[in-house]
Image 1 (cartoon, rainbow, N blue to C red):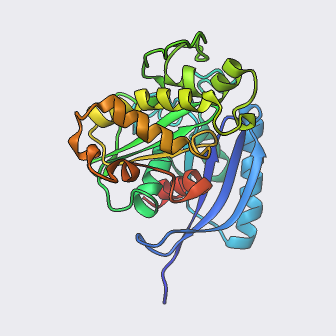
Image 2: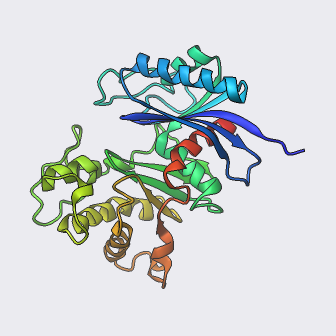
Image 3: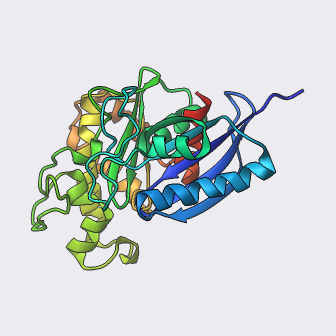
Length: 301
């Protein structure tokens, strides 16, 4: 008889929560999403209440579950595994700074909660079932409203004093770019210069309205290539999975590969080999489900 495990999963974003019931048939089999829901991110208590109500209804159809994984927007406060882990850190999202999301769902549903950043969870899922399967060292980067990166190092998610913040590394200003930067904390960091809001502010229109060949795309690729340099040189990662709404724009990954190779200037010889850069920066193998399946991976353990 086939053994299966069912878990609850939340991909908690700044604008929406994606909710799911996930069934796993084993460590090598990509889990199935049995049910999916979506709610808007409002004030913390109301959002937690609505999410809990959705799961209670889902449990009537799929049976009770003991574990929930939460892949959350960040930053998350505190040290991984400490008592305050699961609280939202300092965020411009009104009302959410300091909110104990893990505790709120535990209180409402009585479940065991496993929680990490959305990008760490996505990196975990891509390593188990997606584009980074079989690799011990890889990174998942999402580029959209913000920029974040989840890091798997030596087969495990990277946690230190906090979680990785790849979107807030400083990047050199591109020639001719007068945009001050969108990040309220650092101005011209990678997120401040290359996130969706930064692109829209710089060019006066949302990124999705910009046609192929517009100079915005080459500038975007240049900033991302600069931001990826530490991933190559400091982390010595084996692969970068580039996702998110803006990160998945047609033709962007090819531009990033070209600019990253130029910036490395032959210092990473393995990436100079024919086809190496094509295998180094890749789109998500799990598509838009990386985050939700990542939350499930956290719950499955």
